[in-house]
Amino acid sequence: MEKKKRSIALFLFVIIVFALSFSIAYIAAEADHICSGQGCAICHEMQACANFLHGAGTALTTVTVSACVVYFLLTAPRCIPAPRHAATLVSLKVRLSN
Image 1 (spheres, rainbow, N blue to C red):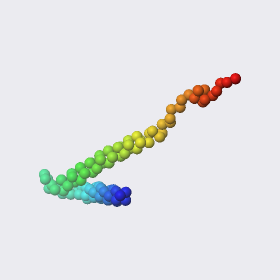
Image 2: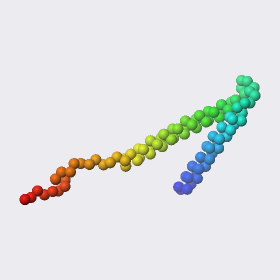
Image 3: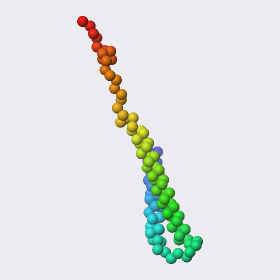
Image 4: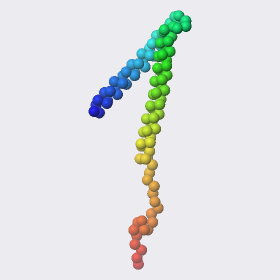
């Protein structure tokens, strides 16, 4: 089951990287196209690619911040030392006999 989850995560990662890289490549390739004015199909596609890149960046930032918060919340109890109580004769079980 763990191997199946890992392969699905890898597949989704490859798809996202593929989409990001081709969106960037499309915008770079069509940056100096001859625009036909209002309703230009290439301009609409470039706007869709830019929206996808913006949304992916926002999602990536959200996921990264969430992962950091969860990581620090899970590891914080290990970093905080246990409170030390003052040692008393009773807690040390010292017998005061002559």
